[in-house]
Image 1 (spheres, rainbow, N blue to C red):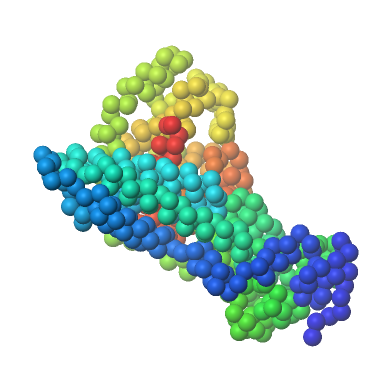
Image 2 (cartoon, rainbow, N blue to C red; image 1 turned 30 degrees about the vertical axis):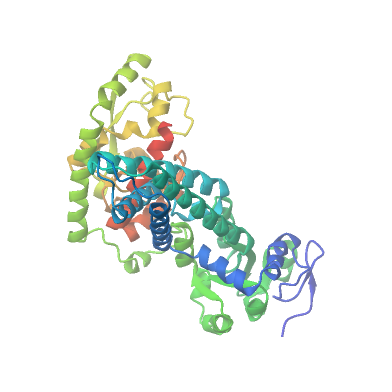
Length: 497
């Protein structure tokens, strides 16, 4: 049985663990939306929100196949063409390939896309425009064939309209049908979820509050997010909008844990520990919450010979191709830097590599001469020491091109954690737990942290980027590297425009 009602700090009635309609007005508004959706609409919304990237990809291919078939029916090729007209199956394959590549470049299949209408429209438009250019290049240049412009236009227009509408339905589902999330743990753990939500993660969840294994009636009055002891809260989750429960590390070791979570599982709630939930929801590892035992169960593949061999082959191939393709840009970039302030075009700096080994990293110079005067200073996004040419090079990532030489020499990889300077590393390993473990793999020209987080300019930024680096260490695979490379290309294109 629940305890008698207690008056909260805002005067709202709080039943012992029962989330009543009068409790915590700001939070209940999101839960009142549950009554507005029928079970069918809710099921459709859940399906759209939970669709993995592969499902979105297959759905786009299906739309394109249908669109091409309709286009060839409505706009059949002319009979008297000198250049052979592409076949229907060839057109479907070319357009599907072009859309998939463009989608990966602009991050159309990433979780962050569906939580923002502007991102959906922008990335769908960029994907469609790039796919049309790529498809025409393949058909006219590589295949030396032709395709009806009306058929191609109809295909891509139908893909844009259909894909946008479906994703907007997903956006509606994320913001209109949120899953209730209850945290069983400390206030600090709850605050980490609040912070992640403010940064754009966990958009599909509504944070109900947090509970502990002990009773603090005075705390309940002072903290509107505290819902009371766990035995009072969890017995009501099946009927009060809570669909996900996250168990904190300190709670998970309690001997009575199954007595609390078994009724929740029977009520249809999804119960996970904090590390697994945060990892899947944000693509990060909570560095302050993990213990040394995490490395025992993470099944890291950093010393797997097959993974290392494949990664080295990809590094050599990509670095060689990158150097050849970017060769025409090098003299232009060097000349622009020289004209800007008359200083040298290249810059070498000590960085910490795999297993703590220091190496020389090469870049195009983006800061003015003597910017540091012998003292290491954190670089910031709008750093005043950056020259006008350097600002463009940083935004487009062209300043990183000389690091392809470091990749060829085996000091770096194309994808991996960004290498830091030795004095920064010395400071960060003292202040951030497990910071040295990011050096288990070769540093990268680009990486999961680089495409997921802003420019690092403080210890706190380094801590956040380490969380992405640890996620990469755990999930390191060829597929993840390819996705990071595509997203880096997208960053370059958006930064250069």
